[in-house]
Image 1 (tube, rainbow, N blue to C red):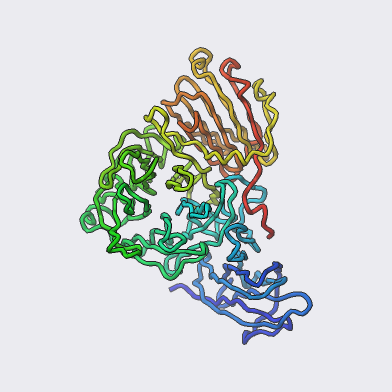
Image 2: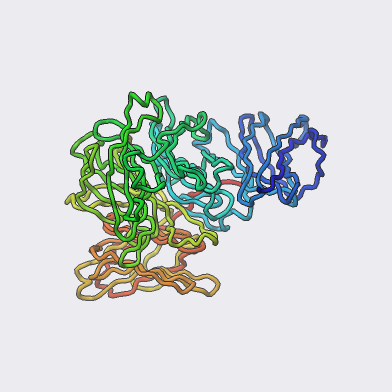
Length: 615
């Protein structure tokens, strides 16, 4: 049995007295924060070593500081990955000093916020442990957590006040996967995000799994009703669907309730205990539907299950889900689970004429070109019982992203999509693996109605800071990027001339301490290709043979590249290891292929909230 040690938060008064704990006053870490009467602290901490108490002292400073003292004591298992959490409201105003001794106490994360204004202003970060802090200087325009690990987006939605909510899988205490939390960011424009308080945290008994991805819809009495998967490796069933409601968007209203506690009895004998990723949406008849992901027990591929909510049985709650059958099967490319499945209407969901985009991610898949963990999108008809495919394409032909999620925005009339800018094939479970989320995309049918466009949302133009000189680029010379490594590039090519003059290549060069890495984007008569050559000597080639590119829009950020060809008819992404930067770019090929007057580049400003916080 694991040893248990004590951890405590001691509220020290200004005269040095304590509330019954005889603790040494050794301190080697001090932080100060201005707070208001309504300020709330969230603190993650733990004790170091065996049979020691971990202490964080909170003290008022300045003249007239009142004497106040109290102590809270908790226990935590002796596991480096486990931290105690406390939410504290001081009901005081002024400067507070937080201090601790690193020999006995580890503080992972502290932030403060005001509940009435947190959606607009976000949290204020007080402290981040060096062990979990993102690399200095990695300011980005892609949404990413201020610390720790992130993966799948969740609960992507918009409330009637116009605020977008984007939750995501998060472990705050290392840049490695562990017990899943739900982190939260809010925005009014999809590009400037404010970090919010972490909404949900796993119980200590459930740190081998935690709170897996899910979805969010408008709650009956305001706020959001959130559906998610509760996962525990040591439990049977391993996974089931639960739900909470939040009205203030920083805490659940009451304990979670079961939505679907077990796999459907009709198929429980033929599917595994993989039963996750509830995606709830309004269907053609106005009722709520849910898709979940699973796989067949005999290893014959992944499966997506369909449920419909009986409103009478639900009575306004999260229950009442009736199994309607298997919506989709996929056994291609050694697919295991059809993860993160969802149906997104491309028009009014209540219209029988609306086409739907069916997205999912293929865990453990490897196709004939070596692409792993693929992300198909299938467009077709959905009548509330059956999905009839019309055509299929890939959301990312270079598989640098995964786990896409979307919804129909009833305010703007747009179908929106976002994904994880990472791929499980690149994660070894040992090294730090900092990632981000993709730029939000819009899903829309091409005029021909035989393929889907997935361009970045129009709001990304707000990221542009200034237009940069492209003289060297237009003459196929090396062009240096701004110091922050963040740009948007656009240019057009004469595709028909590729058959005459050969390919045109955009090289994106990464240099660091004499080592080099390179990302190449190749347009040729054979299609569109992304070649990744990393500093460790590995190289990967990915090609979309159907592509006939005439324009390329490229977003280069710290740690990532996103490419959209022909308004998102074809797209690809690459995660740059270790949050690397692209230092310079150049074109290689014949000038006859480039429409030189179309070539433009903009410097992009960082809009991540970590730039605005003080640690």
